[in-house]
Image (tube, rainbow, N blue to C red):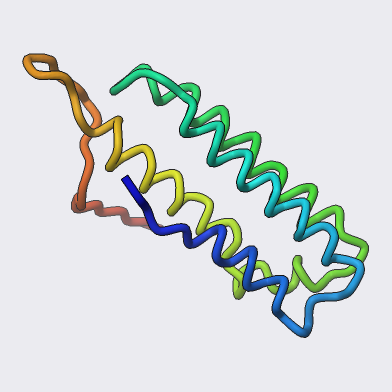
Amino acid sequence: MNFSAPHGDKLRALLGNHKLPAGDRPRVHTAIERYEAWIEELRRIEGAGENLVEPMVEALNRYKLSIDLNLVFDSKNDFLYRQKGQLKLDNTVLERIHAMAGQARIGRSPRGTRTDYRAGERICAASIRL
């Protein structure tokens, strides 16, 4: 199944950003290599339903840490840090794993079994009371 790749697209677009400092270009190239390795790692995880959650979350945490720490915060320039919200690098990581995990394998259960994981749109409500 093919999924959109918003995070990979954002990383590749970042290389074309004329405001990206030259010193950060190698870091972005490394991040793209890590991204491709992460996607391959997710594809290699075997199983279904609940058995996928823990290894996928562990892979997600390792990859997200590499983006947040190695790419953004360890940069000697502050461009990536200042533009973090605008570039949406961290949000698109979650979009990518949701597409792979929720739609492909976690949301489906073998015939006759029950799963507590559901794929597709859901209503979510949150509030803060002060």
